[in-house]
Length: 92
Image (cartoon, rainbow, N blue to C red):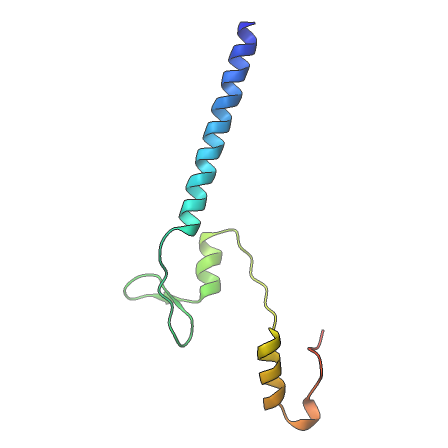
């Protein structure tokens, strides 16, 4: 019976540590306020250093970026493209 209590206490301790660690990680990722350049969207890392948003996030989280083109930007791009280069859908 004592072994059951010890095992239960150990499982609870591991659960508490895991939940606490997860909370700290999420707080680090979500917390804070970022200053972004209105023109190039770089993020202010310090008073003298600005970094690309993708690099800033990738260096501090497990997020992996991939890129695409939203429908609005696609429409703007094909309006600017010469007549012979226009397509109805993005190239795959």
